[in-house]
Image (cartoon, rainbow, N blue to C red; front, top):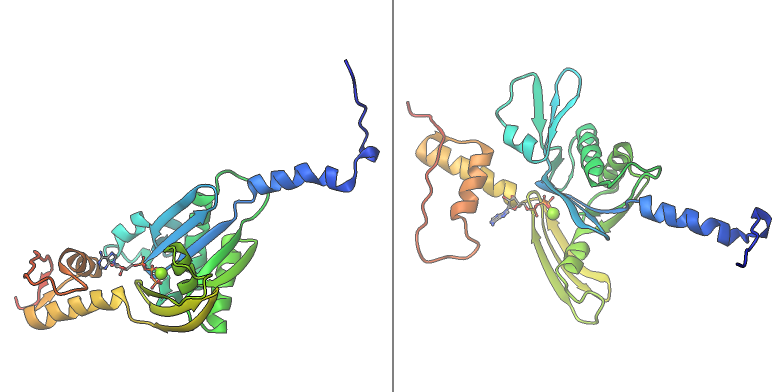
Length: 256
Ligand SMILES: Nc1ncnc2c1ncn2[C@@H]1O[C@H](COP(=O)(O)OP(=O)(O)OP(=O)(O)O)[C@@H](O)[C@H]1O
Ligand SMILES: [Mg+2]
């Protein structure tokens, strides 16, 4: 049997470093993030989408102890006592409450990390076109507080177009329209660059609020925001369908 004697001195630096790098690669848990007004998604190259939850958090008012995030917190929206604060910390595609955003993201990142490891994750996150420097700093800070090591920003229309499989790297124009909860974005992309983009802070949330206002004004019925969203999903349509659709609505009768 042949034996080979190894000593630390005989190792070249890169040979010594290689296993360390591979351990780091296994543990690194780097993520792509879509921190949306309505929903948060976390994606890893290895596992695909590992978190897909509403951007909602519930905390104990007195201690800021996190009681629920995501679906469980959304169930509590508008139904909590004064002792519990249940909010959507993102508004119009940007951070509205930095402390609550950081607390929510800490929970989501914990869920996404496969195992405890020494290295904090690096994240790439989409931001709406037209986001100001102050708003960009707010999202970076919230993610650092949540436990991210490095934060890189990417324009959401570009990320959405790549995700939709549009040929953004080709010399032809690709158009993307993304209607979210808080922002609607339109962009024309070519050769990995944005030729034109426009973002307005009107989207699904405003549709829900319009349904609430309509029922209050025309039917004297007060409904919650979740009920308004449900009605939108049941009978709403982007195109005229030609037939009338109906939904049973639950709310508080304001005329009695
Ligand atoms: N089938 C549907 N028809 C109409 N609206 C829908 C439908 N499905 C989801 N929505 C609405 O889309 C919105 C959520 O979309 P999305 O998850 O893309 O938003 P977001 O990325 O969190 O928000 P933003 O990008 O604006 O920050 C919600 O207002 C939801 O009610
Ligand atoms: Mg979005």
